Length: 154
Ligand code: SF4
Ligand code: SF4
Image 1 (cartoon, protein in one colour):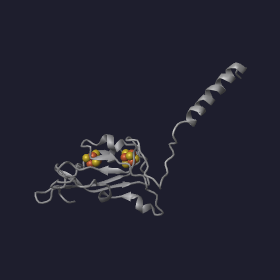
Image 2 (cartoon, helix red, strand yellow):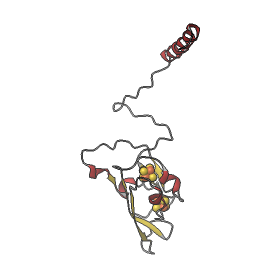
Image 3 (tube, protein in one colour):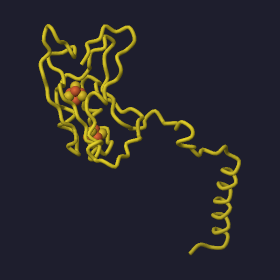
Image 4 (tube, helix red, strand yellow):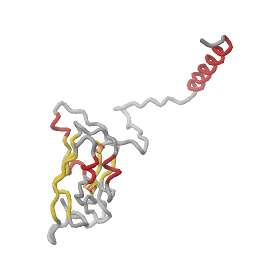
C-alpha cells in the first residue's frame, strides 16, 4: 500500500493522461461507412506479386509452405515451357492455396520467400458463413498485371 502522497501523485499522473487524451482528435474508424486506415505493417490477406513484366514472382520453391507454422499453404509446382511462361524461373506455382481457416498472419511465409513473391496486403474482410470460402486460391491472391507489361496470362 502506498503513502497518501504517492497515491496522490499516481492519481494526478493518471488524470493528466486522461486530460491530454481529451483534447486529441478522435481515432475512431467509422467502418464500414468510411475506408479503414492501416499501418503499413498491417498483415492482411496475402498478395502474390508479379515482376515488372507481369510474370509471377513465385518460383514454387515451397519455402513459404515449409516455414508456415499453421501448415496452411498448399502448392503444386509446374515447369514453364517455351510456349507457356508463367514465372521468370524454371518452375511456377500451378496451384497456390492459403487456408485462412488456419492462417495466423504471422508473416513467416513472407520472411521465408527468396523472391519477395508473397507479401501481406491490407485485406481483412474474410468473414464467411462457409469455411470453404476461406481457402483462397492463386487467382484470388495474384496481384494485377502491371500496366504496360507484356504479361503472361495464368
Ligand atoms: S502468415 Fe503465417 S500462418 Fe499465415 S500462411 Fe503465412 S506462415 Fe502460414
Ligand atoms: S511464394 Fe516464395 S517461398 Fe513460396 S513457393 Fe513461391 S517463391 Fe517459394
